Amino acid sequence: MNLVVPVIGAGIFATTSLWWVPPLTAFTYAALVFLSARDPVFEEKILTGRTVARAPQPALGGLDSKDPDISPERRVRWLPRGETRQRVEAALAVHRKVITAIEESDDVTRAVLDDAVPKLHVAAGWMVDVAHNREKAAGAIEDLRSRDAGGDPAQTPDLEKLEDELRAADAEISGMVDSLLALRARVVRISIESGSNAQAAAGNLNESLDELNLRLEALDTTLSTHERR
Image 1 (cartoon, one colour):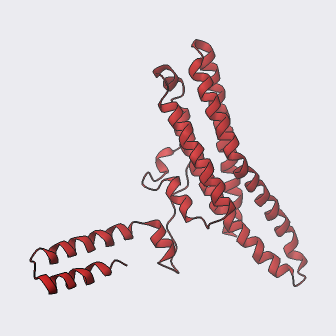
Image 2 (tube, one colour):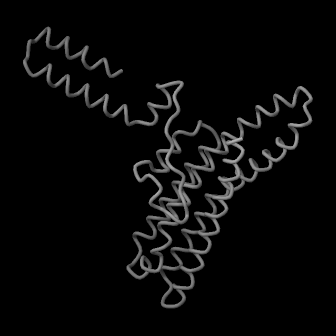
Image 3 (cartoon, one colour):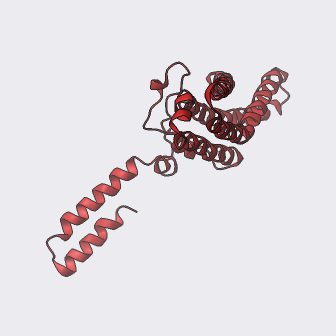
């Protein structure tokens, strides 16, 4: 599609002989090539046979290890279209609303929820990682079922365990929208609380985020273990 630009430019120059047409055409073509090379959708759909680079997995103890140039919103577009991707996209939409609710609150609320914002970003990263590994696990299950069709009993325990982990991942992903909506409601309640009540509510919210991140991390680790086998 980008090659259409130099073709059109050459045609205009051939008919008009305007001196500024070649440099404008070259600049436009270079800009389109540059943008295409940085587009993950282009990589996934056009450059078939190549692996699209994934962001480094987030770590609870080191937020800096997460590449800031590759957001969860971009990485979710690398998931195959389907129910899992739709659920994660819906959860990310609510996630943005939770962040906005904190950012648009008063100074006191933002202060008591200062730790919640990075934890929310970590949760979004873990959620997308779990979704990616969930899709890989689904593919592994299909492979095991194909082998098991030949009557190999040695594959049955691995298949059953992987199916259990897949159901756990599906349940966590499915519940993310409700979990984030509940967090948003708690942010609103904290904004109307005062003094020690707001501090206590913020502490409870941070504990909930820690638990959520630990669950997502455990799921991601378990699914990644099967991927490495």
